[in-house]
Image (cartoon, rainbow, N blue to C red; front, side):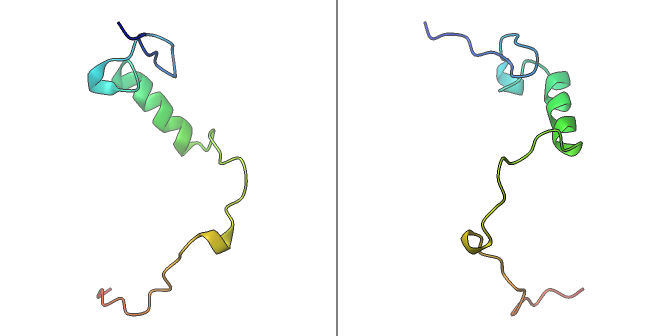
Length: 62
């Protein structure tokens, strides 16, 4: 039997409905950490590696 994966927030076993978390509460805690910028990318993104569309040819009506 494979080892039971644990919730990254509280350490309880994961539930399939909330994977990789154990509950909606832990999923919401994680989302809140992203919104509060508690999680960060460890180094700046190299602008040359990112393909940013300048919007030319965009026919969206604003």
